[in-house]
Length: 193
Length: 185
Image (cartoon, rainbow over all chains, first blue to last red; front, side):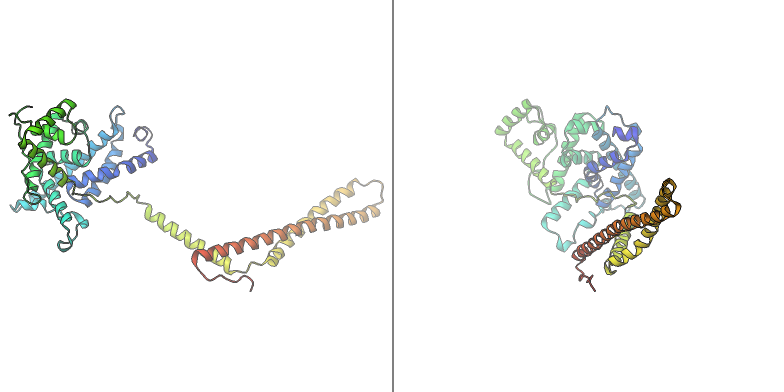
């Protein structure tokens, strides 16, 4: 990234894109709940990355810088979606989650149990407020550590972990009736060990 | 009994608890069925989250790729057309020789004439007629020798070209599965 910043090196930038486009795509697709919009936003991320290359400081981890750009763009897009939805709100809150999982979802007759479970999970994650969804995507799906997520989101680690606990609690309640019967995971500060 | 906080179990489930905390949590789990159920539910939720798969993204393609593709296709067509033309044409060594030799003769003549003029200019012991006669003989000898050498070179080039074209034709036939064109019609 330093070469991109100082020399506008296109080959180096292409190398960066190749290395990072898949994880960034996964983030965008899960944050937006849509493969095609995720694809579009992924391209926007790298465009924005190139536009902001002069702001990159070599003292910071490049991955943190990139993830932060991506997460912020996802947030912006989600706010735009919310704004558009509000203009056509009919009062039925279920319309907020009408986003289909693009063409990779087969028709109802062809869906396997696994595909249905995947769809339930997707819908449950999409029901999470953005602040919890971001943590779940970064922590659970991208396998990041608490410290790195805290850097990306510019939050204390304790806050990140609390949001993670709350997100898992909500997901547990959302998924429990539809999937496996189990006691829901409750987020509560019950006391100290 | 004091139970650990949900945040502690999240750290535990994701393997980020400190070693000391890990030990204490494990000890508590052995004694607390309620927390065992809590951790079990947490792990079940994590497994359920894993069922949501994201397909591979489309590879980033530059906008000029369609143009490049068309250029490549056009190049392939041109190459095939050129090669087909060369394959179907009858490589004729005789024609190659016939095309090259006149020019070679002219070049030899002019070179020999230059050499003769030089020879004549340096002759001192012979009469002009004798010198001229000798010059003619010398010129004829030089011309014949050079011509014979060049003719041999041209023949060699023609034969090589012929062999190369035959080889190319065979290779193309293998690639395209066309019936081989007979080159000895």
